[in-house]
Image (cartoon, rainbow, N blue to C red; front, side):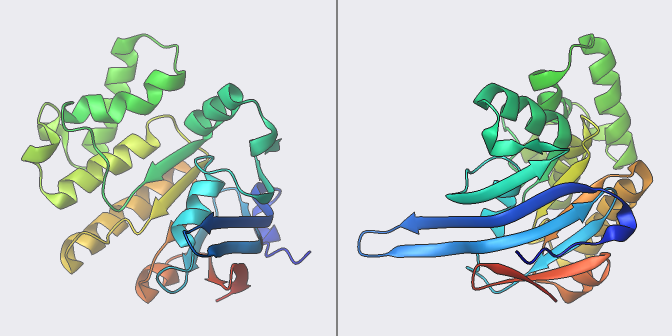
Length: 235
């Protein structure tokens, strides 16, 4: 098995082994992942690039425990993710993985602070007052302290994505998975958002796997991997 690894970051935080994933359409089966293998070290930043439709988002969902692969294994913090019982897999994902999506995925019926708090509701046993203080601290870090009680639809796209970044960091995850986080933003706002995301990840020591079409974004990472024909290659 070919494994794309970076040993400079110590023992791997995340290992993907021979991942396979396909989808059945009415008249054919589409093979998305075919033996995709690579590793991510602690605090490492990895960019995944590839053409549209190559399966980058599918790969991210598999890595984060959202979509079971047809074949292969994902090992996160020493745990084989899809061999865990569903409840334990959900708990590990909530504790160890933060997601930043292109479309933000904020709940419109909850205010900004409540959206940031959501991941903690799944795992934290701390008093709600302490959790709320953590959420407000993160909102201050992303420059939205004055938007804490606003509703998502009252915010600009860039502000909504900053809320999503704060939400992703709420549980202090070891790994942040970002799927085209600036895809819905204009160039200037996108660059500001990337500066914020990379700065917070570096400051907190999180690992980052980011899917992007942007060569400048990929250049900010420690490594760049190309997803092509269902497999991973150095980019």
